[in-house]
Length: 244
Ligand SMILES: C/C(=C\Cc1cc(O)c2ccccc2c1O)CCC[C@H](C)CCC[C@H](C)CCCC(C)C
Ligand SMILES: C[S@@+](CC[C@H](N)C(=O)[O-])C[C@H]1O[C@@H](n2cnc3c(N)ncnc32)[C@H](O)[C@@H]1O
View: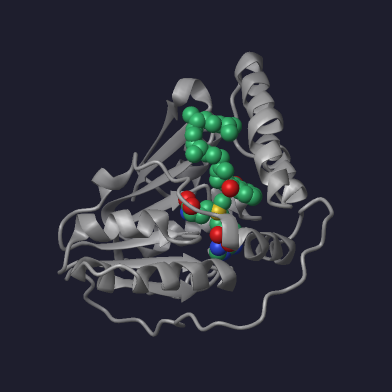
């Protein structure tokens, strides 16, 4: 395993969910409540574009891991001698992730550790991880700059972060298609689970997000030596890859 220094990790432990407040989702606590609420139905939405980042035996952080889709894929990639840390501030999401882990028998899944924590104040030492992945996470974090600064701090020199999310397109037609898909597909499906408000938030969160160029600029500003944003799915999605 490549994780040389063992930090003191605040391991996940279950406790009662907080109440969801159905208003525009502005602060961290409200977002935390939102993700606790969708945890029971949230699953299998992570495409595996950024798995190549993880190497056999590596020590990888899946930031904003939710119910763990990506962490499970990463565990297969780093193998039995690697380590995956899944961090999220929603205890309900982590509870689902931990239950799913218990149902899986392959030894590589034993190497996943779930940590309840804040992307804005990571509980890891400097230069700890060989790679970081973030799936649909950065857009939901209140302070994007601080989150990128924290990722930079905990990455080893020369290592990379891969941040997959919906793309805030600069092309009006792409935005129109994206919003149509959210209104006509995503929200109606979510409504059938009683989660209409939670998924309506998607549209505003993309509007308030950064464009690919803005993400590249921010990555360089916080110290990354390279930052490149790739559009995926005709510009509906995007992946920022930054090197420390
Ligand atoms: C349900 C989807 C994504 C995960 C997700 C992300 C968020 O930020 C949330 C915030 C608040 C509540 C819930 C979520 C949340 O569930 C959307 C489905 C993703 C598809 C599996 C990926 C398919 C990509 C297509 C090429 C493009 C679809 C884009 C469209 C804008 C939905
Ligand atoms: C849309 S989910 C994505 C989950 C997972 N990465 C996936 O692809 O399925 C966003 C996750 O980010 C987490 N999150 C948002 N802000 C956070 C923060 N400041 N610290 C830790 N987790 C955060 C939420 O709890 C939620 O689980």
